[in-house]
Image (cartoon, rainbow, N blue to C red):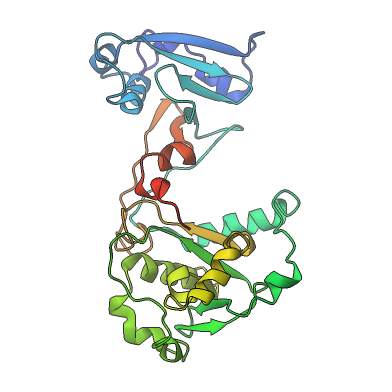
Length: 304
């Protein structure tokens, strides 16, 4: 028996599945691992421990039989006691999905590579929709110039990022008629930086790290005490997000003071569940975005 696997898991053809050499006429094949209590007792089995961590408290210790099923069409393992949004996939080989993350900070260079890959390979699959004359001529469209540290008049045709976040009950600085002239001067936002919530400050920093000049944030790009200005922005809110190069989705906290984990040094804790089932063959638990967002405050609010 290979070290690191129990008598049950050693029957799973990990290497053949990993290499694409497994011959089976069926689209799926299952293996019963027992209850969560059984898995926890097999502390020497790396795969059992990976499954145990994945299942967590969702399965009864003594009542539920945990079954792992390999689906050849989607090249993944699924657990009968978990939603379809959680799968176990290979971290190595031809069908590798994801990567192991370490460190307390996001690497902007890696994100740039992903963005460049998307722009090079996905232009036909996810192009920005065309702008009509009304949206192009939107007079109140503004962007944050992250280099000049101020708000500027701009066009929707500019290359910009957008922030989608939860305002919450944070009493934060917002663009108003009285401070508009100050904020639209070079370095105008610097005077109010201590009143900007951490999520917004992190978003500005990240966009600058990405080498991008412009960022759209509702609270700073729409004059909040001008009903007409807010109305004109809200009416084309979908277009504003559609035209952005990318959107920063701030879903990890209950309000705008939480920040963006990973932007600043040591501001995140990487949590991943991985294991090695044989030399050079690793597995990782993958959770789809929808399942990650489901329990968040962000998912329950009704705004940008």
